[in-house]
Image 1 (cartoon, rainbow, N blue to C red):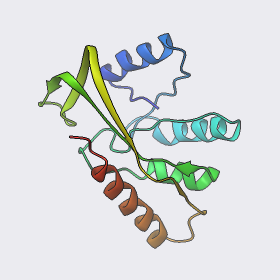
Image 2: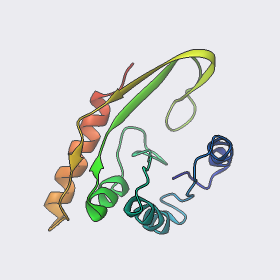
Image 3: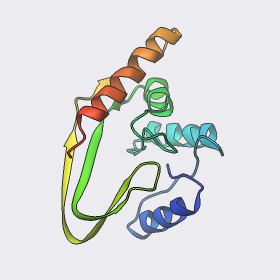
Length: 141
């Protein structure tokens, strides 16, 4: 799932060039519709990648990833990644680091969490806190 903003346009193009099926949406435009499309893809056996803090603020997870995992009954696997050397964009909401040719990548996976369908707001909040905490622990910097 990639945002509709101009930066997302470049990422969507790159993802399509390497063979990914791209779903566009974000918290301001078409986010819930995009999650519905991702749910259909998951039920057909696809894997899905979401940036949990997409649209910012950085390091504050949104509810979309946990809602999707809970609704479809698939494991939620937190992932942290970084690259060295990189071109830093500290003025961006997420302080983006863009890889340069021949850089090294560091990728960390957290424990998978399979969520039951949510029964109340407390269970949603517990899953949300777990995801945000785990993602911040996986920061490879």
